[in-house]
Image (cartoon, rainbow, N blue to C red; front, side):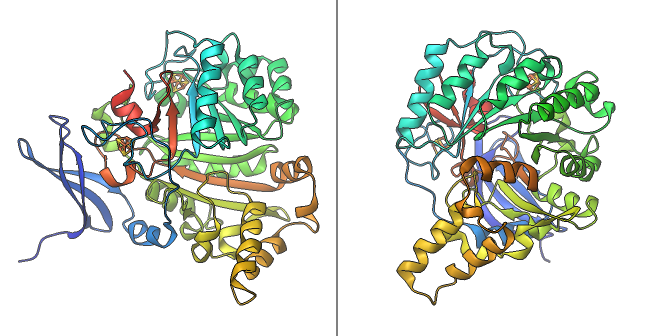
Amino acid sequence: MLRDYLFHDATRSFCSKCQQLCDAKIVIKNGSAYLLKNCLVHGEELELFEEDASYLFEKHRYDKPGNKIKTETAIKDGCPSDCGLCPDHEQHTCIGLIEVTRRCDLGCPVCYASSGDGEHLPLDQIERMMDFYKAREGGKAEILQISGGEPTTHPQIEAILKLAKRKRFKYVMLNTNGLRLAEDKQFAAFLKALTPGFEVYLQFDGLTEKVYQKLRGRKLLDIKRAAIANLQAAEVPITLVATITRDVNDGQVGEIVEFGMQSDYIRGVNFQPVAFFGRGTRENLKNRVTLSGIRRDIEVQTGGIFKREDIVPLPCNVDRVAVTYAIKNGDGYVPITSKIKVGNYVELIDNTMDFRAEDVVKNAIAKSLTKGAVCDCLKLKNDITSLLPAGYLKWTSRERADFIDKNTFRITISSFIDMYNFDAKSIKKECVHVITPDLRRIPFSAYNMLHRG
Ligand code: SF4
Ligand code: SF4
């Protein structure tokens, strides 16, 4: 008699009943992967882990060592109580997120932060948090995301954004629901002055009102369209951010990609499988969707323009982030990952979410100098440059940014970890970190599960 699953790996997770840590196996059954938890008090429990188990085998080809980190806490009570970052964490901060307010002008039923009423952080405290983030990343922090609550309700939001630019983060993002941007053209025009190196990370869950009614509690489609129109008029780059829930908007991922590709200044889409913390309750667990499930949906719903294998695990966090970049080719787009086998070159890709062709080319040239002409690095450099316009690498940063804004499209899938799908291994590699007012960096999932207070 054989078991009805294949034992794949062992980890630790949380029992959904007593919310205590317990041993868990990752098992494969009917093509999907599950956490098989075993709580000493409440017994066995099965939780969906990845809808397409093949992703578990594929991702290891893209894995690479994390960056060494500076730490803020000691190992004492074990993961995830010791955040952070504690010495056990395996990855540096790719995105540092500062929640500048608890206030929000929406009250979304799926809000991770349970935002609504609340205080704004003072500007001097925000500055201390920015300085701390930079210092912990050796003075060269990559992406700063200004978030909330709804950051545009902060009376000093313009000063906050200007400050972020003055601090010379490589990239600054404004994470917003778009309500203010739909009405305030002057604010959209102000954002233009922050480019290049700035974009709006716009909540955009689909193309029907039913979706907004369900996930955000009210009709919002016209507001999203007006926000996009104002940003386009001001020439401000946008990433659409869609929270995906099974049986609510999982049937719209293809339409969202299509809408983004057809719209100027929309640089890409970030899909986030819904996570169950904040106002997202465990009653909705049956609506769980996973990174590999969305990857499969994108292939089916874009008619194969993006094949699932084109959406590759991101080397800095293969468990939880997958990405593809496409470049304009006539009227359509071609995924760069279909032309270049990124899995063969992971050592040339920095541990970053801010993947840039020029950085890979630079690394390829440096590597080829040390390894000699026989290395594949020069081939990679040539492959990449053949996809770019002649002279691209000699352009100014403004010219390169304009080209990227108008001619490339990026799809990312970022999957966070809640109490129910918690996997002790992958949380240690999480690279989106909340910068807290008491000057710690806490992985986004651990923050929302345990540390948000
Ligand atoms: S999530 Fe990371 S920082 Fe937090 S306790 Fe675990 S290893 Fe440490
Ligand atoms: S999800 Fe965003 S827009 Fe919705 S209540 Fe929370 S902070 Fe506000």
